[in-house]
Length: 292
View 1: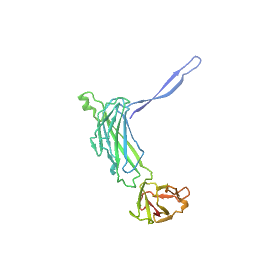
View 2: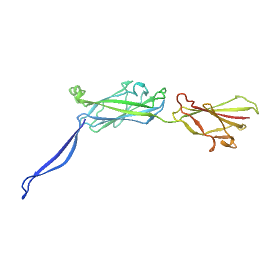
View 3: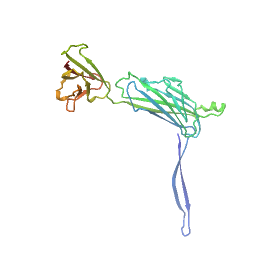
View 4: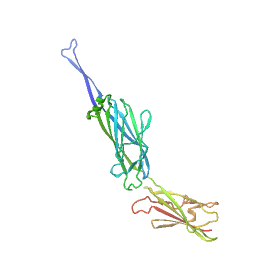
């Protein structure tokens, strides 16, 4: 690592009429001596949270903070560790270093790259690549810590220096980690069924609307709207979740002249759909009963 150097000046003096020597110290100045071979690594993502099946893009920024040129980098990413929660997206890797170019990894599990790029002092390069989050990631995984390891070596100018350029004194290894937490969200899927595919005039008919929450946060203040058939006469609306049944009063929903239903209205019983979880019924069912 870089070395901090501190320095302080001292002065001694005398003057006419004073017997002895006076002394005074200056302020202390600090300077930093850079290492011959050194760099920093920073890893970031386009998103600070994940969902199952998401695609994330990572950026690994390498900055030359040493005194010497850097000319070879080996980069390894553990793709979320032992859980295999990330999968590299083929063809997604790019290098940015004044211009952009594609790069192919030497391995995809673990994900590994070899980059031969000349980085002078204070110059930087950025490696970009994308991963897919596993569709089958366990629901109890609340965060994924992703680690990247970078080995950088001093530039070589001749075949003799090439052999010396990868020695331990001419190479440095740095690590960076990135923790991404699970997104807190509600995700509602809505399906609709009818009790009879065919019917006659004056037959009673039920429409069933099923709301399923595939997120990890309860869905609240849910409002369902539906254009009911023009000749459909609404009689009753029922709601059920986890064995709890509720019948709406006609004052709790709105139905306009075009048979457009809004459930509930501002004063009606709210619709709530629980988040997915062990032993939890994450569906709410609405039954709209009437006749044609």
